[in-house]
Length: 87
Image (cartoon, rainbow, N blue to C red; front, side, top):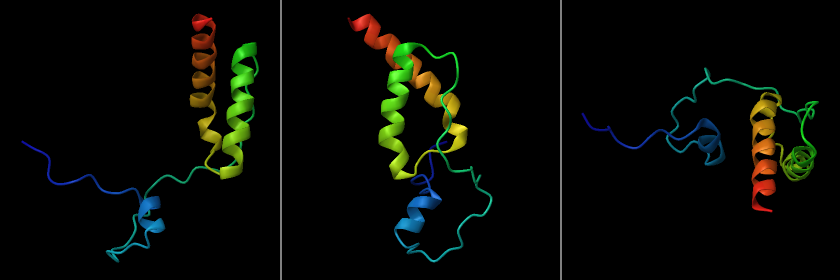
């Protein structure tokens, strides 16, 4: 069985576009607390440097959520490891 049309647009995109279809927006989407997560303890030196760079760039835009801490930590550690392997 094939797919039935394009995937639905995220609610945030529909709001930015002005909701041209005028259909009600879904209310059951998760609402995560906005904010800049604290840097976890125990990160490597390289990962801390990457964390500081990313937070400096991302925090002013308001896209960070507190729930992003785990994924951001893994990204920073992986990026630092990749930089180490390249050198």
